[in-house]
Length: 186
View 1: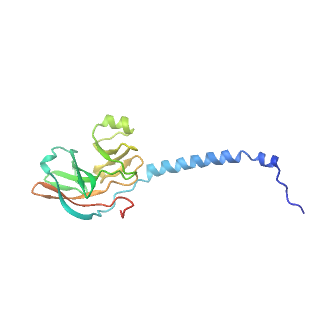
View 2: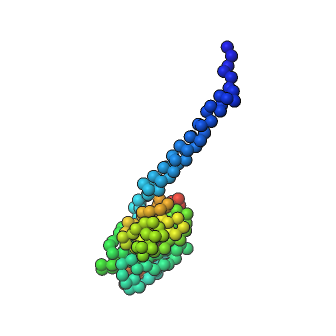
View 3: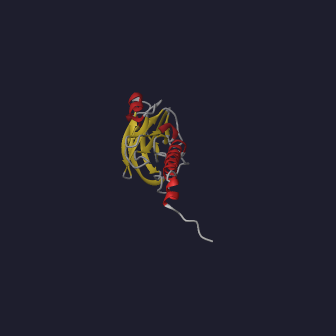
């Protein structure tokens, strides 16, 4: 019995398999990536602050209106303090005013995050319409919602922003801990 002989003609009859397999692979990869970025957003976990030194951040009177913000540095990490219109799990409250703070380091690739206040500019720049001021990364257009504990609501970032542990004493806001960034025990 002789083995079947593979000829050049026989190989050329199946040349179409390579581009078809490549096309299916490319579309499959794009579908996986799009579904991961759209449906793979991680929810903020229960509070897990790494304790640090107590550091003065601001006077509560420095923030007058909802979504006013101040930038500060805590434990070498750039952060943002925001006054929110409603309480969140990590916020502290003074009468009917609520304050929360987040790391300004995007959880996607570590670019700086900035407050986004202008709805039309955000819609044009990020291709996402916000209903209230949020935090956004201009590198890959991720948007984080401070009212949802810093959760990533749009863009490539999958993890929420790390939260800063705050406390109030006599109208002064202090930071005393920071959640680990994703991949660093978080």
